[in-house]
Length: 377
Image 1 (cartoon, rainbow, N blue to C red):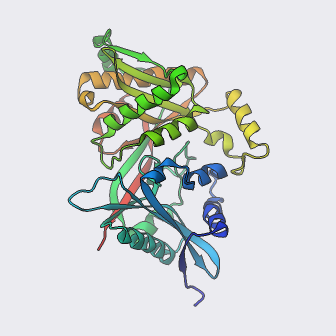
Image 2 (cartoon, rainbow, N blue to C red):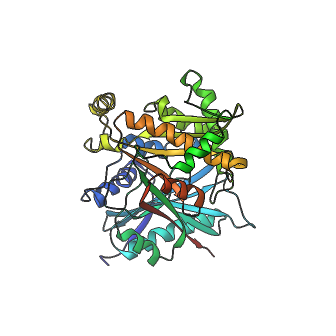
Image 3 (cartoon, one colour):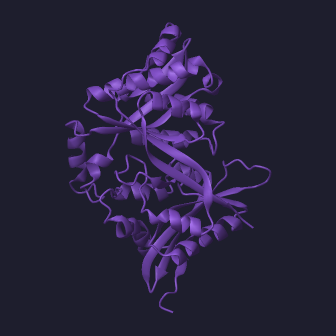
């Protein structure tokens, strides 16, 4: 009887404290794990998060003899396209002690919840949707995660597969030195398109309009990608407000082809470097320490979380020239600020064009995140 596990929905403050605290309990001994900020954890589940305007989620917690030993979330998104009537449900926020029974019961709770909401497939982990942090880290646990990327114990993969989940897609993260030598083929592409393609930074004096432009570019660029769910206006503006706190114009580039915006890239300083010793707290002194470190240029790494070229140019020389030109301009600004490591992530394993371009620039595949799934019913 002492081994019995109960799975309960998160309902009250005590439940939420345990839910938020489980990553600390399970991963704190891992030297590569970085404790997320408390505000970041809570804002994800806040009803002010515009993702909840078109989606629903339920958090669950696993207990054994009254002690929290695991957690999971189950989600449905009204914007998720349905294929042949097969509605897709999500799971995420997974944490568990190394016990297959606990993991199986957590995943079963997510399955039951999404089935009750009309779903016949399950996929994850998503926090909470595909346009946020997603995938289980299955390779590259020897280095800390960068901004908005996850970390996980090595046994999580075994737990998920033992519970019946199978691989659906791998998401790749590359480490790119910003002082790379530009490949001759890329230089030739830029020379051939000279006069047609111009690159400019984000105009902060028109920030709202620029964010709306980036959303239009993003939704167009990613529309045919596996797993794509469009980002709403409210979501992208919410994201923009958060990014603006740490974003530099020089770390952005918008490619204009014949005077029309056709691509964009955004790089962000890797805040995980600066928060590792804050114990997840910005108050009372964390904010001051974080801002001081940013101002002093203490960051040595950055991540490219957003990039895209309009679909109609993706398979041609102009698309390749825009992609390389945007990366080239931003990496020079990063290097000038003392950044010596840039993560480009995530890239679908099936995106041969982008994977080949990053590798040609010296990018090294150093982390792999996996999305799992199963058919239900």
